[in-house]
View 1: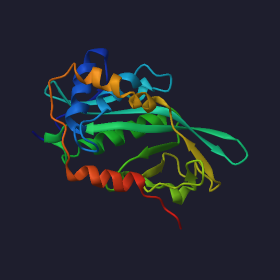
View 2: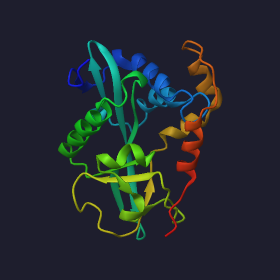
View 3: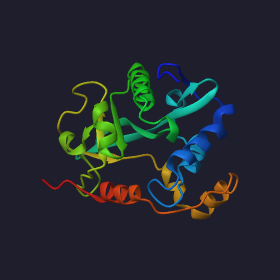
Length: 218
């Protein structure tokens, strides 16, 4: 397959199960034994913070090979002023088609759409190795942190408009949509609708743990 033989379009209702299955295939055993991302995709669509105008799939020859979703988030400064921003994710590409430029294409397409809608900041919590090439920078460089002055190494910020953040301290408040995934019984019940897969350990889980628990202290 040529890497330019694809279409990026908005997800439709008929795509839902295919996208959920793709998320399951891409994330299974990646960060933890098993995964919850397919359930997150399922519940995010019904959440008030979901942005359907930025829910894109990448399709080739009638098959969905990747997708990206966004939700509303907000930044709050030390005076209590709020700034609406975007929280990116989940995003994934089918394991058999990774490193083909499809993730880059999804990001750049969705960034352009977000700019056209008037958004100027995107935040993502992920492995920096996967995102700095797309313009994401450490949250520390934009003075964006979690409550308690915590600057996680995995908290990444991208300005869609240069100068959108002015250097003041901002506290990041993501959507609470992913909190629904803390319900282990609900995740397991949803997962039971798919073909059985074995939960197992693999080295990427330790990598995820290190990235997600590391903070920048200087």
